[in-house]
Image (cartoon, rainbow, N blue to C red; front, top):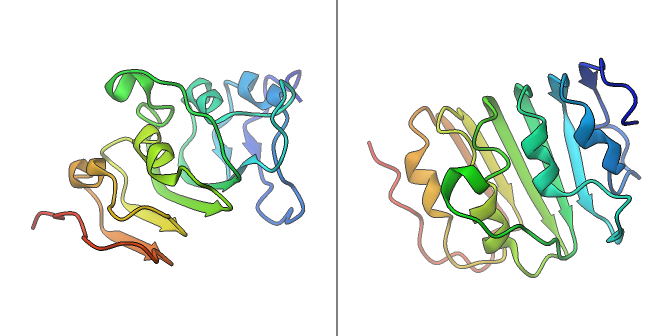
Length: 158
């Protein structure tokens, strides 16, 4: 996959059995559309795409669905520079967790660009929302789906 360096659109949303993307996707720096990004899925070796690889896909736009299956490692760093989505100008982001024990840490790591307009987070297992939700200045739609342990919503401004 990494040899398709001119590829601009990759549609895999309807590939329900797809559990992870190959690592080569991170080399597709011309990619504008990636509608779904499954991560984890039981594949923890060097052949699988990792959340931090999204950092290389800074030309993405529109919508992105991230499906996280199982425990996924995140890189430790500081602020937006460490976030793989911090420089990607997405309008809509959907993050869904399956069998994940560290969803709060992953959400903190995924801090999206502040221009995000629509956010959906499904099956988060923490008791609070990530602090960065307050910095989403253009947020118009927020879906919090199946947050069974959520006790406090973040202040969402005006």
